[in-house]
Every structure is written in structure tokens, then in C-alpha cells.
Image (cartoon, rainbow, N blue to C red; front, top):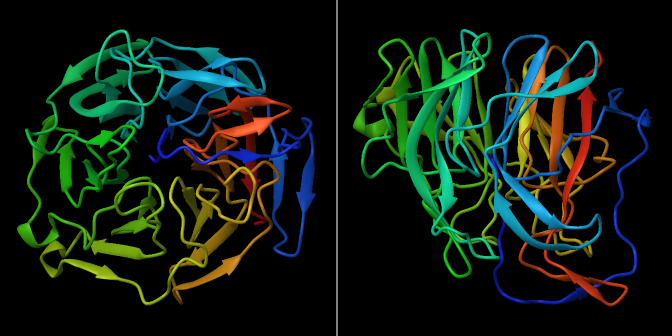
Length: 369
């Protein structure tokens, strides 16, 4: 997901201070009895990528947007095909075979140890423009970790190509909900489309018509499959500032019942949010378009208990970010990279204007057992 580089209306903000990555080993522990743990930084700063757990020891970070500029000034961005693998036991990184195409806001999932990459956003021209100008592609691939190789599979059906969708796995099926087809200076749409990819036949399958659209278009949302239910949490309905706090759900064993909207709303409406599931709770982190911070980023961490369907506030992120992608392994939710300032809102620091700031910071939210 999620995910986002928005070079939109030019509203200049000025600040002399900016959130910096906490030193490695920094930890906080608060009233929620959980803690933040810093890990070895990404080899390459980036945002608008996707993150998956290949197994209990390996996390993969795929594609996204790298920055051109120094540590404090991002002059422009470019889409990457970079793939980096994180080894959990040793806290180390290595580089894997690159994506077959450069891709940001990719949709991905893992089934039986294989990574499925199902569409995303690509540059509209080559060489790309300095600002974000991206459209959807339906090209899809599968990665074999042992062979360190990618193979092409059936593309998304015509008319359903999109990136920045919520992705969830249920048995052999991968469900892709919402997303967007265009992101540029003036346009950012939000799709209601729901599609499914069969990892056995390597083909796309239709879902029942009543389940084929979420109640309202969403992009840059968070979500997951928990048990037999697919959830879509928060996100945006068109453009960057139309943030939402809703929780949509679909019973995958009874799809003809259609989508439902939870009466319990996420406390902080936001897009560019990420999250993961540990136990019976969904954890949501970060996001952008915060009117109360100079960098436009939400530091909030919040958790949703599926029963009794209630939200509560947790300790803030020590390094607030948006445009990242979280993944849960065991009792930790890993959050690599992301953006340190709201994209599309230039920030002047000591007389120099920065249009974004992708980070290599990597931490995990550890839930007490």
C-alpha cells in the first residue's frame, strides 16, 4: 500500500527543526505495555514501497520511490525496482533480484513462501519527470526466494489495473481491494474495485458482484485478512486531503452478504497509513495530511480489537512516517522506511526548500505477550 508521493498545490511551510531518526537501540515503553525497537536501517532510503514476510525469518521490501538529494533536501524522486531482504535473526540486509519493472505503490502478498506482485503505479514517461506523474499497470509477477528469480503471471484484468490497494490472503486466494489508477500534480483517484488472484491456477477470478466494490473508493488505506474476514481501514477518498476513518469488512466465506461498515471508527482519520495484525488486534501507524504538525505527518499509533470492535490510542511513533508498509511477524510489526514529511507540501529549512524526505529508518512495534 499502502502508500504516495503527492506534488500537489504549492503551500509553503517553514520550520527550523525536523524529526530525525532515533539512534539504533532506542526504545520506549509506555502505558500500553508495548515498546518500539530500532533495527538496522534500510540500505536505501525509500517510500511508497511494499513489505511482505516471506517466512518467519525473512522480510522483503519491494519497489517504491527513492530520493535524489542529500539527507535533508529531496530535489526529485524516481521509481525503483530495488528489492532488499531483511534477515530477522541477524538484523541484517541483503539485495535480491530486482523487480522486472520499476514500480511504486505495488500490491503484494506471500502465499506458500512465494511473493506475488500484482500491479502498481509506474512512470508515465521515460525518462520520468521530476515530480510524481504515475499511472497504473496490471503487470504481475511471482518471486521464488530459493531461485532468486521473478516470473510473469497473468496481468490484472483490463480495467482493474491499480496500485495502492489493500491486499489480503485467504487460502490460495489473494484479494486486492480499492487502490488508485493515477497520481500526478492534479489528479488522484480512488477505486472501489475488488478482485481476486488464484495462486494455484495463477489466474484472476471474479468475486460476486455484491462484493466486487467496497462501499466507497479508497487508496492509501491499511488492512488485512483476519480469520475469514477482509478489512479495509482508513485511507483516502480521492485526492490527498479527503481522509477517512472507516473500517470496511467482507466475510470471505459469505461474500454474497456484501461489505459492512463498522460502527467503530478509527480515532484519527488519515491516508498514507499502514498497519498489521497481531493476535486479535489490528494496529495502525502514521499517515499524512496532519494540519497540526509542521511536517504534515501523523505520529499516532492506534489499535482496533476485532471483538468488541473498539479502538484505543497507543504510544506515538518515535519517528512518525507516511508512505511506508508494515508487516507482522510473531509479536512484532516491522515498519521499514517511509516519508518524514508530507509530500507535495514543500518545507523550507534554513533557506532551502525540500519536496519530500524518504528515510531509511527501520523500527518495530513489539506487542507484549
